[in-house]
Image (tube, rainbow over all chains, first blue to last red; front, side, top):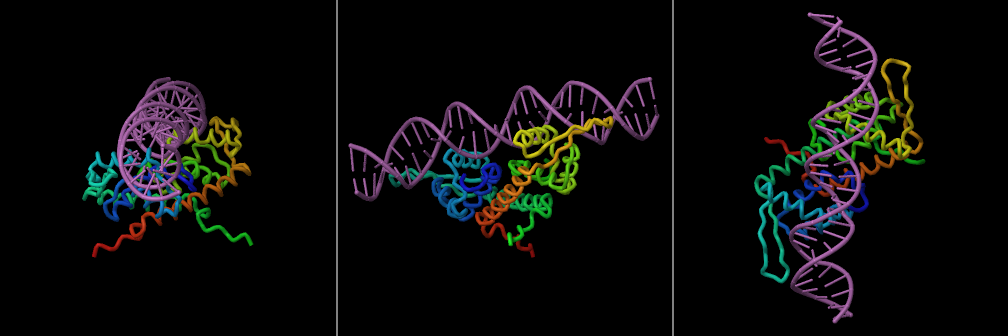
Length: 117
Length: 117
DNA sequence: TGCCTATGCGTCGCCAAGCAATATATCGCC
DNA sequence: GGCGATATATTGCTTGGCGACGCATAGGCA
């Protein structure tokens, strides 16, 4: 991770990967790049984090994958399954609920900071 | 935890505890109750989670504490230190940045779901 | 009197997740 | 030839949440 508190990220990484894939099939390294772009360089998934997540999603049938050895670069392309798309929706809803819950807990602290002046 | 994805909670529990304490001194069990109320029953910190967090905050001088044995119930009251209040501000800012970051990553998925009709 | 529940604090050990480190291989550039 | 980017994978360490305990008191109820 990068400019953000890494502790906070825990638990939303799988959601982020699913989200990036909703845009169309991608291979691992490309997912990493797209996520970095989309997050304004704030999220930089390490290989030791990304690949285990992808393998887990594959095991759970959330994605299907296909090797492409036609070029010198061996690439493993990942695509969301129907179950994966459904799961993504669920995860997004969970995320929204979580944000709303924190907003309530933080109360006035969640309001935009008053200007220093 | 309760109605929310427990994975998501990881990393924000300390923030929630600090937040509850910003309201004034409280003892452990009361913190647990207040957090439950504030979150609309969604966050129910277990003892095995709460007390280690409080001990950690104490070690890091984010809170100071005082035993009250005057009643039959032994209670350990916690109060935010100046460092704790500062830390709370930092954590809130990190949280806001995190939410904004996820909003960007999710893109259109972050928009409110269109009505089924 | 005994029992049950709520209150109140604490610790130990398991499990999962993130990730640094490491391994392997190709490609383009200088 | 050497270096950095591309590309995937695994191993092992560390941390955090938390279930399962343990202990003690207070109050209600039979």
